[in-house]
Length: 423
Image (cartoon, rainbow, N blue to C red; front, top):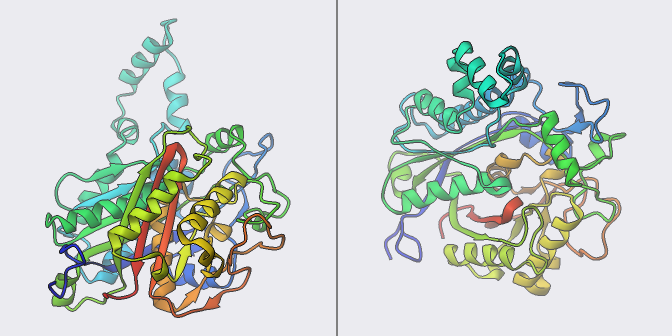
């Protein structure tokens, strides 16, 4: 085996740049300080009226200028901000990146000011024809662009000089991890010498809150927002909607070392498995999640005994946390009770399309810094989920490997295995 190849003879994929934005703040330093301090970014919603909503809290990024300009504009700014930090850290050009872009972003919807503009006027009683008439009269390129699923990635490609057709994907809550997987696979196939993987989501809207509430998926613990997200606790009552982004610069290890880049971690393995059981619910036996974890371990060439820490999907919904415990205990057996496992979502909420990328970034930082962020709000343990969740307070640890889980609505399951350094 060559020095820079993995167990299957593929190029070893290194991470040379990381960028992060969440409700905890802008940039890796601010986020890491808050995350390890057990600080919550969940707060009351002030961006729009919530008087008649069951859930009135979220992990929003109101400190960004685009936070009041609609989901599309905010998702772009989140992606751009994280990408700038990641590319600058990598030492590559932020105007001529020279590799492909893989963007995980939410499904596109017209913002309300555009919808209202379209519904105004028009004499045709046929609603669809009236909309077309008004749209033609509007003649707004900006409105058209923001309704296109690939528009954000196109803007990012122009901004950073990425190569080829930028890929935009949406695989529910696994999207961010899937974007990283696509970057890893492109490098392994020899298609590029670098890739930019981004997960970004600025879609914490009133419509999103209503839809998730209709699914009974959101927490309604509005009185103390920072206590609402409580993964693996007996009294958990749903996830907290949030916004955020993360970007990773991926390169073959050989190329990165040759140019003197700092190696922030290694992407050892990726695994995915589809679940056709239900649009939102996980298969009761956890078999797709089990298969995704096993596939990631096999791709990494690691056994179950070689994982030092698990960054859980840990949404704080009654069913998902139970299913995640079932899948992990099936794969890791009795050892699962001794593996530290924590949920970043206890502090930042659920960033949906961005979650897998953000949690991968935090996983890499966890290994590099030798500190495990806690699972906060763990005051009422669920006896049916006996896990070492690193409760409430950070923990120092010498970690070589991390498994990061992303189990999404619609049966999208993606797991990543990362290592601190090449083996």
